[in-house]
Image (cartoon, rainbow, N blue to C red; front, side):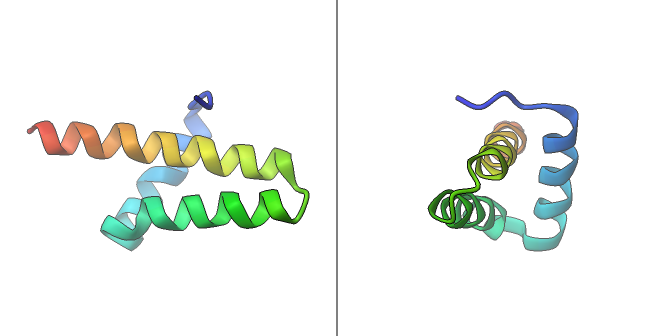
Length: 63
């Protein structure tokens, strides 16, 4: 599982605000595209954003 850092959490919050339920799909699509393009470091960053989205939305679902 990717390490979730402050930057990933900030990006995740922004994506959730802008894309709502589509935020996770957006981050996964970005990671997949970048991975296919050979940009593994950037793909890993987007995977971390996806992990942050999962954590943040799991907290929302529990409330």
